[in-house]
Picture (cartoon, rainbow, N blue to C red):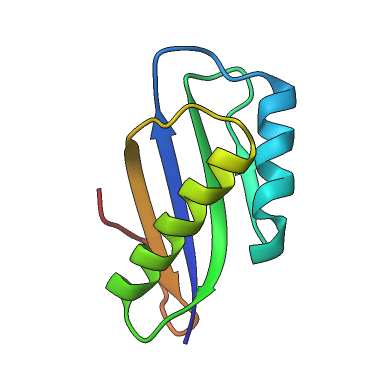
Length: 95
């Protein structure tokens, strides 16, 4: 099943446009989009295949961490996670 997972990491400094553009490039392989310009957080929405909601979150979290590393972003803790399956009606926030 295909899932859309939204993740956001929060830290102690403001993200630049260039940093978020790098993140957007890194998540593009997962039909991803990035956000966070001018805020103290960066985020992405990724599309992943998984058998369960929990599996989707695990897979997307790992890809998010790899993308942030490729983009040269700080390794901040994930502050928010939302996930919706292709058959779901509502976005389910987990954290």
